[in-house]
Structures are given as structure tokens and as C-alpha cells.
Image (cartoon, rainbow over all chains, first blue to last red):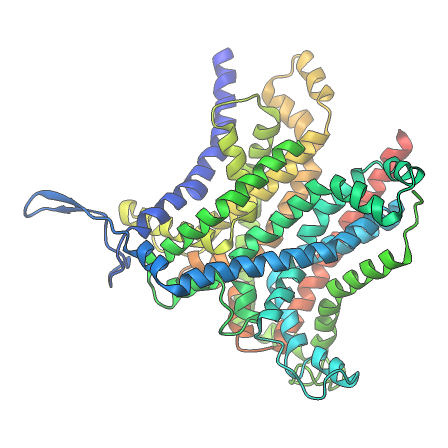
Length: 295
Length: 272
């Protein structure tokens, strides 16, 4: 009886575990393996690490670190990594700046209003990411609505280039990832004990003082969670730089894509992915740990 | 503090909401534009909706995407519910920390990495075992199930965490076997979470461009892949019409879900 129970328990644990091991964890090992191979014209287009030579009956084992060396020697890839980190960090900062007042307002609204406002934040999150990026293409074009508006108000006297610039990429990231920032912020702000603000006021704190000394520190878990939810995926973003960025907008997700699809250099694309993963492991672990603390 | 908020806060948050909605509204309005020049207004028309339904490439890609989304969401709901249940209800076991990591990481993992790694896995498997033979619907379903599973697991886990365990304990005390306990008590309690997890998975799968581009084969373009290849070259009025239809459908579903949940919450509050 007991063994049957334990067997059932084990099955329940093993099913999702094996699925994730097979299709989430092991693929990373494969990427690592192929990053040590050489690109060649073949199917699949990379050299085997282990090869059995049947005529001489010996096994050859060949790895190369050439792809990694190439990544570090060439200025281009380093620039792409740095530029991705910069774009992601600045976008995250602006998402926080725009998201915080919204989250704060929602958390302090009456229940019915709160439900409505929360729905307004969640709604874009459910609608297509790709189509929301696309919506900006029409707005930012040379003869798009933003240029029309700026011309009509006399801020500019001829259309300016907004689409295919770095600015459009920042805008796209802030726009599409904003709900990811607002939701965790809202969750922490909603839990906050408002008596603390009363206490601060009674003790003579001005509103801005109680904001910086009480609200902001209490909202810290939400700020961290929101920033990581925006920052980590934004670093590897492909769609936004591809649709809104210019040809000179350097982002590592786009470099990986081009390396893979245009140059068909699978080993180099894998090395790009491995290095990106190493860069992001820190923030990802940090996020997991702060999740644990919240529990 | 007072319930009300200062004017400055309302202005800032209001500007934020305008930022969130202006592009979507512009997109919807221009989908009814007669003119082919997407930004010149030529009067109201349903022309692009007719064109959209006549476009066979878009229609067949939409059908492929709907199939994939349905199967992936269903598989992800089953596996994600198991994972969420294991993480919140099972005592410590070897590998629990690892499972937690595997469930959280896909939520933020850049899509290019997930896509590339799965493609390389499929290619290696095919070389070694002859499976999967080529890439197409099956490989996309596996990829989508994997990342949607994580979303379902998180939703289910947080629902389980918010439930108190007394009902489950009572059933156990009354002699319910683990399996009947799960199906009779736990499952009905977490059903709303599983349903919203399924819906979320469905929309995420329907929307994915990057991962599908890596793991799909020739002749198996999904809807986002077709949209992407069209809009890459510039703004296309049919895509505006398609976007409007998708946004309206999703909005109705989300609003309905929120109204229902809100009513239930009010019911709960009055019962307290």
C-alpha cells in the first residue's frame, strides 16, 4: 500500500520534471556542445565532436574554442552585448518611471475602480506582442501620426526620422513590457499598510519624505521583480529591434538570429547564446531567490 | 492616508494609460480606412476585412496556429498543473530546487535562446534516433508546451498557496485516497487557475514568433511568421484588420473573465 502511494507520488513528480529536463535543460547542454564545434557545409551544418573512423578503427574527439575566441576578439560582438545591456537597462528604468504612478494609483483606488484599472493594464498583456510592436510602426513612420501631430503643433517643420532609430527601440521595449513592471509593483503596493503613512505624517514627514522613506523601501520587492521581468527578456529581444530599430541598432538577440538564419553559422550562434546565458544567469538566479524570499 | 489621490498622480497615471492605449486605438481606427496608404484617411470601409478573409496564406497560417495553440495549451495545462501541484503541495524532495528553477527560468528566458536550444536538440535527436523526422507542427507543439507549462505552473502554484489546506486535510482524515482527493477536492478548487492558465497558454502560443521560427520546418508557417514577413516590408492594411479582430476577441474574453471574477469576489466578501 505504502509503496503504491510512493510510486504514485514519484510519478507525479517525475512527469513534469522529465518533460522540463528533456525540453528545457538538456537543450542548453546541446547548445554548449555545438558551440564547441566548427561550422561546415553539411547537414546539419557543424562538425561532429566525436567521430568513429571505421577504416582505421579509432575514435576522434575534437572540440574547438575558436567560436568563443572569435566572439571576444571581434569588437562587434562585445559591442552588441554591451549595447543590449544598455538598451535593456535604460528601457527598464523608464518602464519603472512610467509604471510606478500607474501601479500606485491602482493600489490606492476604490475596489471597483481598482478592478477596472487593473483590467486596463492586463488587457494589452493578453493581446499580441507582435501586433503591439507593429502598431508603433504605423505611428512612427515618416508620414505617421506622431510626425503629423508634431508638424500640426509646430514643434517640427518637416517630418523627422523616428522609426528605425534606437529611440523607437526604447519606446517599443518600454511599451510592450510595461504590464510586466506594473503588476508586481501593484502587488506590493496593495499589500502596504497605509497606517505607516499616517504615522509618518503624524511625526511630521512631508508627503515626498514619506514617499522616499516609507513607500519606496516597502515597494522594493515589487521594484526588483518588475525590473528583472523587464530587463532579462529585453536583453535578448529580437522582434523590437528588427521591426522598430535601424540597421545600426545593435542588439545581441538580433545578432544571434542573423548568425543563425542568414549566415547559417550554427556553432557561432550557439556560442553567442552561451555567453548571453552566462551574462543573464546572475539576474535569473537573483530573481529566483527573491521569489523564494517573497514566499 | 485618504483613499483619494493627488491630481499630479492622476495626471501621471492617466498619461501612462494613454501611452498604453493610443497605439492600439490608432491601429483599430485605421483598419477601417478605405485608402491603401495606411496613414492617409480615405473614409470608412470594411475593404481590408474582405481582403483579409480572401488571403489564403493568412487564413491557412491562422488555421495552423490555432491547431498548435489548442494542443499546446492543453498539454501545458496538464503538465503545468502537475508541476504547480508538486511545487506547492509536496514535501521537500531531491530535485525540488532544480524543478523550481526550471519552472521560473522559461518565464524570462530570451526567446532566441529557447528557440535555438530546442532546434539544436531536435536536430541532434533526429541524427541519433531518427525522431522527430523533420520539423513542423510536432516540434512547435513541444516548444510551446514547454514555455507555456511554466506559466500554468506559476498560476496554479499561486492559487494553491492561497487556498487553505483544511478541506484537503479533512478529506484525508475521512479516508480519501490521494487520487480521489485530488480529483474531488483539489482539482475543483484550482479549476479557475487552470482555465486561466489554459487561456494564457493559448494566447502565448498563438502569438509566438521567435521560437516557432527556429523550430518550424518549411511549409509550416504559423500566423505570426506570416505577419512578420509581411510587416517587415512595411505597414499592411490587412494586418491592421487582422490585429483588430484579434484585439477585439481577446478584449471581450478578458473583460468577461474579469466581470465574472469580480462578481465571485463580491459574493465571497458578502459571505464573510
